[in-house]
Image 1 (tube, one colour):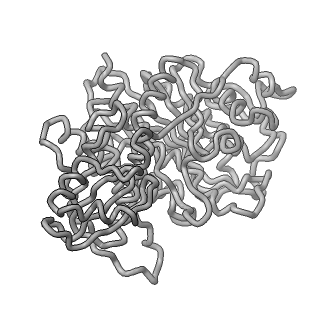
Image 2 (tube, rainbow, N blue to C red):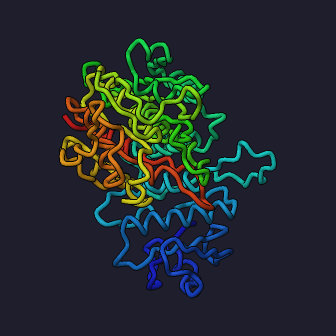
Image 3 (tube, rainbow, N blue to C red):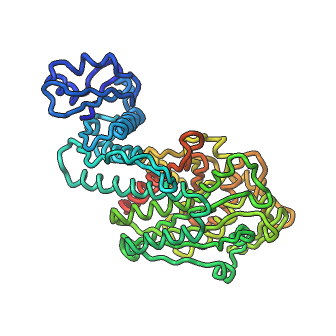
Length: 475
């Protein structure tokens, strides 16, 4: 049994009932429980309690108990259950009052927290750690209802989508190539009977995707433009378009990146991974929404054929771009993909990209940068982000910044200098979406963790799933 305790040693209602059955044994043990949210204390063989073990979890101060402490408590409990090798557990946290959130919110975040803690990526190791006993069953002690059953299905599907996005992000670039991403999309299409089309280099040449092709020129891996369609709503309902940056490895090209931490550039396809994970989740839960995913996938490599600073290319839209820095390649593949996405006449377009280091400097690793040319769309994304606790912060997209993209030799330059780097990158994309309801999510700081816990996070799959579901509910 997993029971919550507040920092003041106040027992939650379920914990108080167990303490009464155990004749005060819980209260006597509280001196050893850390007060912070997520701290744990394991008790064994309590009198009057059928469970073999009782796990006490700190909830923090009662007056400060809200979304953050709840999620920390779930994470702490999940980590302890994983280390204990528990086979089954009853999670007496989901019925706690978390601000104004409904119980369905608690359930969703409990499932996501548990699944995140038990995610492992060790398929490339030969010396694997022994498999711990699997947590076979988790009981959420709540009265059954159709709404909660639907919430549970949604949460499980979202967790599966996050796991897919994390695994794709964690795979090295010699495995996860543009062709590999296309194969993964094909597997999803086959499993859930989705529509799929993969455009090859010759198709892009015929279309005139000069910006996309300029990034791919020096790579030995052929580029792919992956189009994956899920149709869960009426045929006449306009789809949401999700456009995911799929640079499977980014050296910076001729504008070569420093060697330190360049290995992390395998995560530069996290936008593409998020799109695949989101569509998989929506298809698995049979969400009543139409979604089209557009994924431009390529490597960005140096070499004799590589684009050079000063080159001018013609985009699919017909606009010309002077490439001042080949390491600003994400916006070059996205601008052609956004133009291509317009042919589906979407109700809204969201692109997702590990686009700028400047966004990491601005917002750190907590919030995703949000830019939008439509305030209503921005509000819907903020609402979904808050519900998913996959948070965003809206940045300006004012015309004042467009002057920084001025070029003497083309319609625009692909960089605008150091000031406001994430903003001018978004302003560049805005030039290709003027006729669309469009938003841009810069996930450079939130798609992966560095350091000891290095790895993909699976964000912003929860945000995108919630946005799509909220959108499907609107008339």
